[in-house]
Image (cartoon, rainbow, N blue to C red; front, side):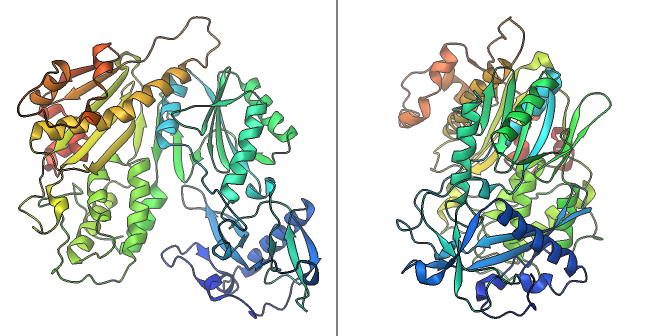
Length: 541
């Protein structure tokens, strides 16, 4: 069944790989590995799975007329668990989707994935409500969905289909690499969950709720939460009955590369030590001196005339890993990661130095993550802070973004952080009050749907007593912004503030949201808006 491993007719793009990821390989690279026979086995298994499930059929090229045949490429990967231990040699057959043409062989492509906000919220509620959970992985996910158009592809390299190249493969099912693959799978899964009685939530379409169960969907990984183990088993059984091939991975121990640990006291810790090790290895900081804080003054700027970086590691790849780390389990470094990410197009030595500082901070905090120890009495809270035009007069004066203030907020439920944001505002604020008011408006756009989502989560209960409606307390340290919210009237210095920022006042008036003054020293959101001294940073962290 296998050919002699020659590389005839391989498209140059099929040999391109992410050099920063040593675990991901092309066909040529995989065949040079000492464990290449494990990859050969994986290739055979991949093709056999496609044949057994009738994902394609072999056709003569003479029968397809002028239809374009898409090239295919193998993608190989060492699959590891969150601890970095090799668990599987994976081979995946992918179509080169860049050859597709819009309006001819694809149309819509959008497919949503669950928000980390929803995942962290459900982990918190699983502790409070004593919910059972399961992690499920779909097998050959995309090919489980049908195609609504005829698509042809070449036979794969390394498998002896057709030495004379007189045949092609007609796809009967979805396949990885197609532009519409993700959307087709999403539509099929949505139809199946809807038939089972589950309904998606408006605040997050990848959260499905029915009676006493919640399902969170991220492409081919989904988490089930319920008060009843029997309910979870019935859901898994029903999905398999509907021809959704999946494997039960048991209690949630990892999710999307994030390690999930249940502590003896009932709390949950999430962390990413393996990803941190990859970052340290990529920038060469495995044995460097550590730093106590990730950010220092002054703020980073474009530095157009600055010294060029050494370029001995891939800046954008490291920023991508840092972004995922900061957005998943490490809000303490979100501010500085966003600073460095802004200059990915043309990084200079100062930006490289900043990334290395983050790496040295991670080296000293490698085993740290987020710990969820819910306190029911605290409800939902949102800490907000804006840093007014800190970049002005310290960076390049020709860069308009130096005038922008920074938005930062942290939302907690039962004392557990469920989401956090650090970003620049999109317009120039003329005062600290306006900057803080814009921030309040932006934070409320997240708070309002989150309150709705938590209320829907709490309804997943066997109890006949209706759960209390979740309300939110906003903690603000700017008196001017608080007055604008609690005593709205036309003022000469604030009458220019755009109407779009006033949308949340009705929620304050009806009591759904309360706003309270907090001392700056206790403002948690400071950690995602500005560089802080070591003592304050460690206190807020």
